[in-house]
Image 1 (spheres, rainbow, N blue to C red):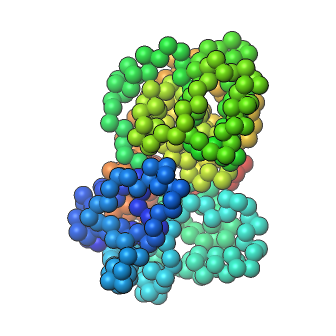
Image 2: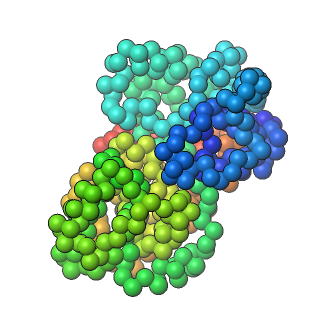
Amino acid sequence: MAKTLTFFSNYFNHHQKALCDELFKRLGEGFHFIETEPMEGFRSDMGWGREGIPSYVLKSYESDQNEDQANKLASDSDIVIMGTAPERYIKERLKNDRLIFRYSERPLKEGRWKIFVPYLTKKFYVNHISNRNKSIYCLCAGAFVSSDYRFLLNSYKDKCYKFGYFPFPEEKTWEELSAHKLQNNRVKILWCGRFLKLKRADLLIKACAAARDEGYDFDLELVGNGEEEQHLKKLTDELGLNDRTSFMGYMSPEDTRAEMEKADIYVCTSNKLEGWGAVIYEGLSAGCTVIATSMAGATPFLIRDRETGLVFRSGDEKSLARKLTACLKDMDTSRKMAKRAYMQMRDIWNPDTAAERILKVSEHLLKGESFYYDEGPMSEAPVIYEDWYRE
């Protein structure tokens, strides 16, 4: 049975804390998180890193002693999870063929052209292709990870597990969330994130204009800030949506979650550069009817179209408008989808289950046995391509 696990990543943040807390609960001093670099200022400004630093976090960059300890843990631990961190930490471990999980978003989300850039070709070969026969497996933080690695000469073939990021689970019951949402005077549609081009908040504003033109009544709230904010406000004004649209500005992760708990519908509009899409996870957990872009990595893992949410074709404002108006037309059916999604997140897609399963799978792998769960975290990640969605 595995007694020690070390998780390497660039910096510790709220996307990882819940999972790490669960691993620490099970392994105690046998669990360590190695933070390999200081957090960027813009992420700190967004509220990242305010959750406090637990005792299991070791900042390798702060001293030579910490760096030496990190290298020893990399070599000696029963299990290593390798997130975004320098490859030097697992060089010796690969040589000795010891168990590693690579925690990865899709490597080719900007396009497959990357494999033909010489320095990237070398990097992909050294990090992924040359180690195909080693005891290294992939925790896929997104549904398109497996197909990207398949393109990289079958890297991690039959070694890909469904995974993701696991924020703290929702504390309110379904009944409490439902009562909260029923206090809205009108159906509340919510969008959260940085106002960047890749996030495509403009699609939702245009879809809301189409829904308004069909006679549907609602309030739209957009939480966040960024370079596209003035453009989005101008678009809202041009489409005559000012009377029902609120730009809420920046909110902390905690306040953003509180807004999700009040929202009836949550919409994620990002393009393919959204490797995972934590807001999808959070919206489902908060009991919203989630309408999600087909290209976010979390969508194929977490949403069954018309069962646990709705999917629209990425970048297609008409596809989004159809899904939004269908949702507004029959809110009773929409709330049933939201309840099924809430139960799925509560019972399966949560940090407690993810931590328990990664340790269980590791027990099998350490004995040379292949093992996958039937669904949810640590089930087999199928090869899914960008054209998977059929409306």
